[in-house]
Length: 113
Length: 112
Image 1 (cartoon, helix red, strand yellow):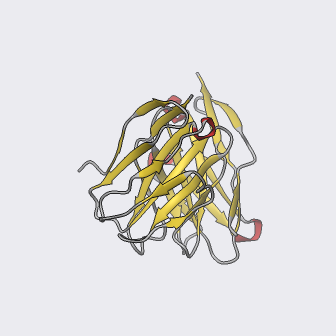
Image 2: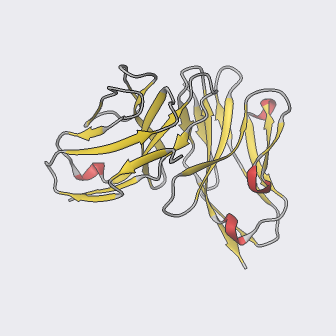
């Protein structure tokens, strides 16, 4: 069982370019999340999805969009990347009713120049 | 709104010494509390969690944490630190919306 996979592992991107970070889970969890991790700020929630077909905004949603067409996949899109979106991005999932316990992917390191 | 404070940005201990990492939370009801560990270049791994019941919870790798409602704290402890414990530690609080709020983390350095 792989758990959560994220792709790519790392990426360098020119400002203004469009980028999609991929996240796939094989645990059949209902809820999925995207966080960004920045030094000294911990993890901040970007977007979440409590179940397939629904999404919601987290603490820092501006400049990002998500979709949840099925249970397993939760891609994060940067429509026009800016340098302030340089960060490490983590995808996570949790089972419905599991008291918020979340399982994390290995992360994607994104650099926007 | 829920929030978490980890007052220590960086802690250094000698191998074999005891460890306590502090975590204070703010939440209106009984919280769900978590400690995660992140090794360099890795994702987050759950160490332990508190939902209800016994206020002293045991986790993996010999860690434990105590929930103190009167102090709004959930401090992480380990009696004897190993070099492999060097990592960043995050406290998190969960509420009714199934979302987690994380603290800013405490970086642990272990001296030989």
